[in-house]
Amino acid sequence: MPGAPILPGATLGVMGGGQLGRMFVHAAQALGYHTVVLDPQPDGPAAQASDRQLVCSYSDAQGLAEMARAAQAVTTEFENVPAQALTALSQISRVAPPAVAVAIAQDRAAEKVHFQHHGVPVAPFAVIDSAQSLSAAATAALFPGILKTARLGYDGKGQVTVDSPAQLAQAWQELGGVPCVLEKRLRLDYEISVILARGRDGAMVHLPVQRNVHRGGVLATTLVLPGSVHAAVQEQAILAAERIAVATEYVGVLCVEFFVLEDGRIVANEMAPRPHNSGHYSIDACDVSQFALQVRTLAGLPLVEPRQHSPAVMLNLLGDLWFRAGGDDEAVEPDWAGILDQPGVHLHLYGKRSARRGRKMGHITITARTAEAALKTASSVATHLGLPPDVALP
Ligand code: ADP
Ligand code: MG
Image 1 (cartoon, rainbow, N blue to C red):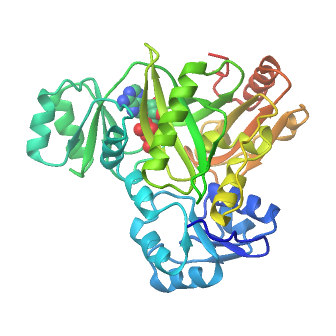
Image 2 (tube, rainbow, N blue to C red; image 1 turned 180 degrees about the vertical axis):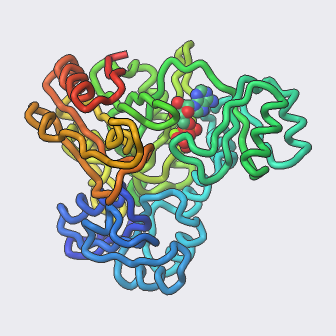
Image 3 (cartoon, helix red, strand yellow; image 1 turned 180 degrees about the horizontal axis):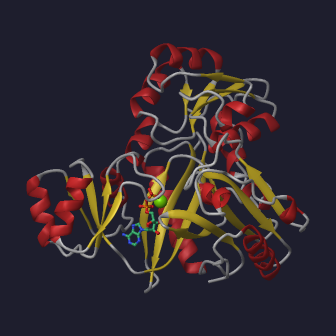
């Protein structure tokens, strides 16, 4: 049952206090909602912006009860919030996305089975969770492969490339013998993601399909330019993402990452039950952002198809940029003033108190009238800051 919308003036809650929570809070407050953030760490990116913060663990019963009292509906910005915490919360409060979808997204093996079950192709894989499954996988045609921990991996962490059964056995041991997925390493033409929003009434809208460039397993650049994704590929990917959402009666914002193979076929890689790094450009380049969609789905407000009004390039800002001089001892703030003099440069910093290598500190979205102009500015920004220079229309 759709139920009545929760109107502005009410309080919306978010589990997790990172940059995604911060941008959710910004979008919620823009619509006139109050916010409460539950995060084990005080003063994180979301807490700095939020009306209120609860500092406690995700499974703290008192904290969850307080969240349910304070907020009329609760969402998550972090897929590793224990699904049990969301289940418990959903008994006393309105929660989106559903805990069942979050539980699937938390487990690579369950996720792949879910995709396959709904007719969405995945890379050839085997689950490694015992000595028997390890030796069975050794004979499967999965090399060269990537061994990935089934749970808690992100930004390429918990992944080892393996080229032989001997390397597989060693890698599994190094990963602590935890349940893993061995995936065949595919030859990718490029990578894309689909971000959709589904309402309580089943209505779905989506952002334009993003083209993503990863560096070292971490998203580096997102391009949303005319022609950056083949039309037939876009269509297939949107249909597949919609099937995945409908299958879990999803409510909220969902991102599905796909690989586009050299023969034009797509395979689903993974899903995130929340807004996604590849959708940050929508804040500056679309008339409705992925975070505004998250607020609308949570509050039960109507959804409208977002319109991209400007070609966009998004550059991720990792902590490495603060240590360009070499050593890890002294973080030096990059020269923001030196890039903000260019039109169409939108700088977003997440308020993290210290920079660390590999840590997502912020992003820059570049918008322009044409793809060429956006790429030109992006490349000049990248050069000025010292970002690796692979910004180009592939
Ligand atoms: P994470 O959860 O850390 O984002 P992913 O499974 O999405 O992990 O892997 C990160 C990146 O590594 C992908 O975006 C892609 O660039 C590369 N990658 C992962 N799996 C494969 C594969 N089977 N074949 C080729 N490249 C892969
Ligand atoms: Mg990924």
